[in-house]
Amino acid sequence: MRTASILTASLSAALVAAAATQDAPRISGNPTDVVYEAVLPDDVFFTKGALGSNVKGSIRAQAPKNGNGVDFTVRFDNVPAEGGPFLYHLHAQAVPEDGNCTKALAHLDPFNRGEKPPCDASSPQTCQVGDLSGKYGKVTQDPYKAHYLDPYISLKEGDQAFFGNLSFVFHFGNTTRITCANFVKLSSSGTQKPSGVAAGTGVVPGPSGSPAPFPGAAASTKLSLPLVLVSVAALAFAL
Image 1 (cartoon, rainbow, N blue to C red):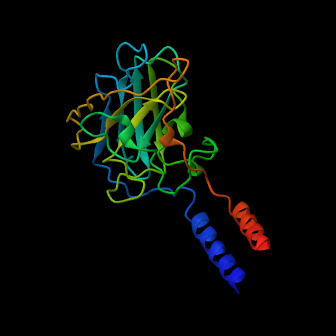
Image 2 (cartoon, rainbow, N blue to C red; image 1 turned 45 degrees about the vertical axis):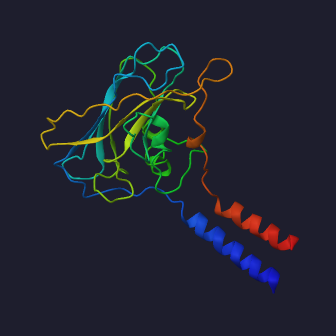
Image 3 (cartoon, helix red, strand yellow; image 1 turned 30 degrees about the horizontal axis):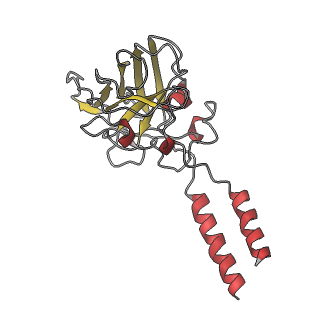
């Protein structure tokens, strides 16, 4: 009886956890009269390297006329000569006034996909919602410009995939955070100019002088239901 109870509880927990992970749904009905923009600040967050001045750039977002998905216009200048290809993602929290990019936490990932395995750009619905560079390309040149439609991101406040009150972070290729900025809602004409977030204190470089990866960003992985069931069966056998 005790073994059966443990098995039932374990299987139920496994099924709930597996069900929590799903592909991102396509978003429709986004408002077409709002624009969100995040502009990188003048001061660099990562201060332990020889970057000189900060990466410059912005991400601008607006729904297309049919309200399906979000059109992104991305530009970056003064990209470092080393440490790429560079990554950028929507993150789960806004950057505080002190400019500490680590407090933006992990990527926007409402469907618990996790960072591993890496995003498959040929199946963007399976990627983290906020993994823009994973879905549409890493930053490999200076200056860098990109424009794309992401069908899985929302401009509707309250949606799981909404990012208008959040931030984006620009990373070295090893995921160390270089700089970050909050999104600001502009007028429908897009005339209001958002200001970047002030820089923080930076992060500690690795042993060789290269930047050390931020550990909080790559902690979760996508659950495999068959693997979970096998594990539960093994537990039952052991009992």
